[in-house]
Length: 536
Image (cartoon, rainbow, N blue to C red; front, side, top):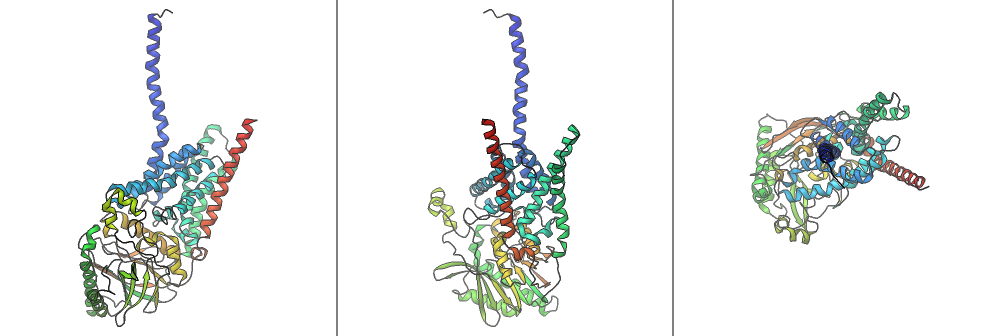
């Protein structure tokens, strides 16, 4: 065969034209992956300490655009990228003191749940009314994350980013599942509205039922939130109580703050005695009871006479009961305990933390973790044991439900205190381990959502801040700075009525799980039917 100079030139010209085209095609193929990751970052930006709650809607709108019409395998990968974009920055605080290893491992595992949701959303995206099925699937993913592995990790529930949002009253209707569902539904619905509007401009026709579902997906959650406003009330039903929240501060931030356990106890006693002096001088109202944070006495006051004396002196100075956060050993078990300390009788009641933190208060897979890094096992030398009963202290006639730190992320722990008679809730916490990270603000937002969910005043006493007093409508009326000694005193309403969310408990979540299962089953059935038709 003879090759002419002309044919060689034409071949070179064709190659030079196809090379940029192929590069452009590769870049276009990367757009969905990049959009998935960036929409996850946008969702993170919607969370506290920022008040950009509304960014969750465009985040899910973009996620819906990325997933719609794709295969479940593509949805799996794109969902994982969305999860990484969201969770990597959201959970960066988990590596503040222990390095990036545990943080990256946690995110890698948690993002798997988001990936599975992505696969499911891609599958149902071809169905009529797909935003409803897709939003229910997201809540199913959150339900799974809240239970496994190691008893779950609900951090990053969509509801916890909505403390400042218009959808917040829906927490009183059906708890975090209904609130989260409304936000995600609106986001997917927003994309569907835009998609159908663009389609109508192109074809001058669009299916009316599809347009109606898209519009309702955005409108119904907003209307529902407005209709739920009467469920949110600050009215006192059982009188009021004047509560004092103590933040004693810690000698230094980080994991080694525990090496200064006696100093931490002394700081909280000193701040309580300072408050007592101000009360005596008439500068501050006399509180009915005082709330100390988690780990305010890591020295066991039942076994250590000095610690007992310090707490006793503080209680006598203020003259009212104190809820003290202690670490105690009883019957060979290590317990994270709240102790009700009477100024005349001493310790009269206790509550043992039930939802303890994996890798913080107990170490799963200890031998495996030790093989990877011995320093990690030394941080948790002895596992804490779990409590088994709700904790409601009667303090000067008021019934105060105790939800210790990490427990605030779990629906069941908070609800159990309210159904056990709590007229207000206290969330004693210790965030000193996480320095000045966003963790404390994320946890504070959880407490605001819980206040609305159960229509209860919520107090948040923290060792190093931010401590706060939250009204039943989720409003923060007082708060401290970080790493300062301070106290908050305020008259707060006591309430005993139950919201629909309190009464219904887990039922709304189960209902949404059934919706998700129904949509997924429909999508799988439709896919099999189409495949059989193709084979014929």
